[in-house]
Image 1 (cartoon, rainbow, N blue to C red):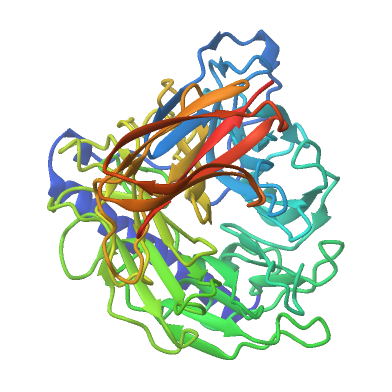
Image 2: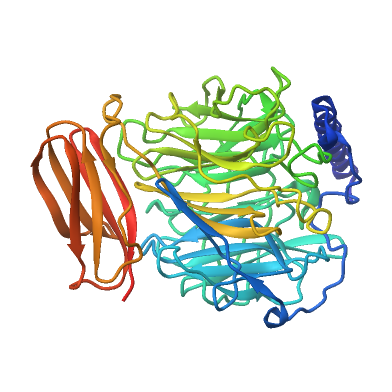
Length: 577
């Protein structure tokens, strides 16, 4: 190790220590029993502390799997046995999701799988669905007996899935990327992809010259190729190019591609939060050159290594998210940054902060707080962002506002239709759960959740402890309303969830009209093709019910959409024969 890299390693570890002290100070100032500090693992790196012990899932007891639904959200457990029941005694956290762009009913989720809650040894768990997330299969883990962590999943434009997984042998880090051509049911033997702790991966699906390129970056201090922290594949994952450095060494972040395949990397760095741009990374014939590196003000920093006063005592409280608007609307090309941060301007433990750039990252708006609570003691953590094809920005996070003085957290959601200038009221999606369950063997809830948005809502991979242990869930968010031309949609229009659901072959759909309008109600397949027109006429104010007979169509997930004047809303339903 050369002198420069030794100095950098010391700098990074000093930063980690500073974050720990600052977070523990915040916890202590909060008072109460949760402010008592607890011993942490020797460090936060993903290294094995316990030996691998094989466990047969078939021998473990089971209980009913957790699931629930509401008008704007339904959630179902993913790490279940072949009968769809919860496996008592195992644990799962830190999930990531891939959605097939050609058939959104096909999805895969990867996570850190613990065969027993008494051990910190984890493996690369995975599950998949073919019915839009209503049911999930959990075949097991990739490479049983191999220590793996930090799962990151994505899809390419052909519907192939990729699973980036970190491993550590003798304290040396590396990543392998596994590929699935059948929706996540099986995976290949993997390809070496350099890597390091807290890696993230994105795949270009823009249709540009970089379409299919795979990009990844990670924390350079814990790298397979120090001081390198970036690699790309220009042959769809058959090989990965030698490591490169990134200006100012961003870490604990994400990366994405713009409308024309330009690459953006975002994370915390030696200059604070920064976004780094490359326009050559998309071109396989050119070297990766970094065009700009610009500081982004989010009025805070990432919090890590917190004590028991923190909701996630052994890990990060969120990572830095970057997303690009690729819609055909006036906000196309906007660049967005978001993170749950320890604020500089106040002593609120954690807020979800957002900033916007309209000039490809050269300049940024002032930071905006997404969470709308009035508390100064609540934690808003694991802030996660994605952008829909229509330009809507979706943000979710975990929130302690409903449980003052406690770490118990609920899932919250907010959205913006105007590029983040204004935000919806916060929507509570779940009941509260205790994120400390699993400490210390599972050490933390992981370091992130993951989300993929579409025009009707968002697919979410998240974790909770509703069964008394850490488990992974799929969540489907339905965005309640849309806003057209800056005018708030009427609140007395509504589209309700069909019933029964799932159904065979008939189901009823109820909707409400608030004023005399021309009403269109149609049914669409997951590719957006209309399969039935149920209403196409002027309706007076009132409540209406219509029955759809699906005898002539195949089993699967369908969307039904109501449009009445400026109001429109979509929901999902499942036909099972």
